[in-house]
Image 1 (cartoon, rainbow, N blue to C red):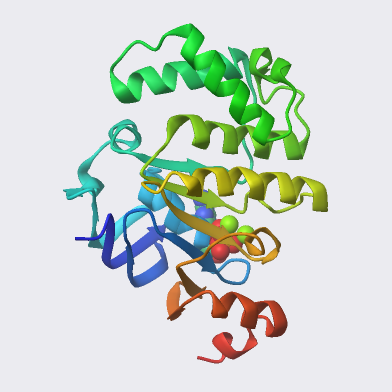
Image 2 (cartoon, protein in one colour; image 1 turned 120 degrees about the horizontal axis):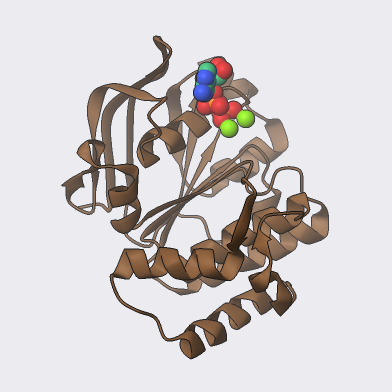
Length: 246
Ligand code: ADP
Ligand code: MG
Ligand code: MG
């Protein structure tokens, strides 16, 4: 049984159907890419999976880890191992990045985490992300640059070790060096064979150095094609034109 099994999912926002009868399966530890032009419904899928109440499920089922998660709260979905990084991470004054992650981890595992072990691990991950250790003590995202906010999202993913991480345009708006660093972070996550990924992107830069198991093309709320890593190369060369005609 796949880790994530989306069947005949339709999602509406304000009574407008955005996703139509969508089917998608992600196996344990697999890396899937979801590509499509702006407005196709990529973020809508991520939001619907996480349980954002603005997105109404009008039909279909989503089985994650053997459970029908559509009936679960956002919090329970996260505890179940679902993670999503945001396109525009919010600033949280008064909560340090380090405390935020440690609290989330303790919530998720239900166990106290020894400070020494935690510190050792977060320092190692900060190093992978080319971030100074002092970032751990700064308030979450407050005064962070666009690139630093994205790196902080990847840091959360690396520390929380979800069973499925949805990265929503984590590469957008980043310069070449920041894309490489974020990509290194994703590669670090891929080393741990248990973690699956759904990478939402409309550019292919972040994928260049990553292993990809499957690619799905979303146009106007429909998945119009499923394929392998070769689809990424095709879209890179020719864009979405062929798919938009479908
Ligand atoms: P993508 O991420 O592929 O660019 P989105 O999922 O953000 O696409 O948007 C798909 C469509 O759904 C767009 O027409 C967008 O305007 C609409 N939409 C998405 N989220 C909302 C929302 N919270 N409120 C109103 N419309 C929304
Ligand atoms: Mg978009
Ligand atoms: Mg989007």
